[in-house]
Length: 365
Picture (cartoon, rainbow, N blue to C red):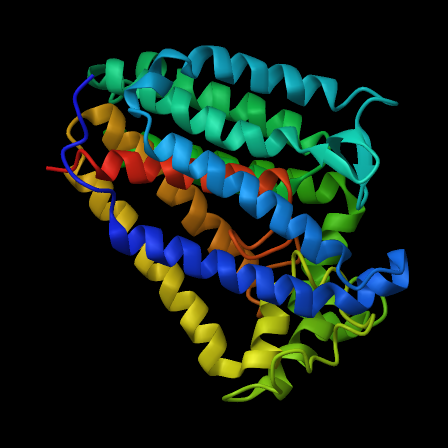
């Protein structure tokens, strides 16, 4: 293995640590009231966030200093393990149900979310597969269908939980890798139309998803039901104004806004820190994505370029969906804001993935 030619991308690293620091502060601010009400401990969620942040930083430092080509050797094994975990979590009595979805493996409040592992596992395997067989990607049957079949299988298993948000991030990041590898836009367009039909089918098959769509179009039709989260999110953002109500001064976190420390933490940021605070967070994400794409463009080989593209795509898609839901642009779906929302496996794996991205930046041309 070649020695690292330079230090990792400093801008990317600084943006990551700043977003993580903002997340720790905002998780405490958003969750203290809820934590005291549920557990009698103001610092319950803060302590968990600090624990997983430390674990994530350690994992990021490790992956940042391990040649990214190492992961190419274990990509196939990793994907198989991810599929096994997705199957195990569906077994009644083994998979833990939280928020209406059987998405967790673990005991008590500690657990792992196999769908989070699948995101990075799929990105690694597709990067390996398409870098080795890039000359076939323009062929529909032999080139495009095998990777899409794997993505479709993973998406189907995630939807059995069900977890539409994580599934959407997986598909979005995977399609970005496939397109970057050279897939024909015409083929993807045809498959996109099939995907739209399938998405409509998923909505029709589950009445609660149809309720979310109608609530998205007019949340005030059912203000105490399907439209409740969207309305309370807007009630948090609106009063924030330009500079916000002040750190710790949110009113919506007092049991009005569900999941203020996870899916809707950006609502609390906008309420307490205002337009300026929310915009600052968005600028940090844009800088992170820009430096990540720069790393992909300047990567020394195809595997590194596709891997960087997939990791950046995962971050960008997740940010767009989360903030889109919070401001009412998308129907409500459970998905965290990277590096900021309270989380265990999601936070740790995100920092691990960014560590791989930072390692690729060390070899940038």
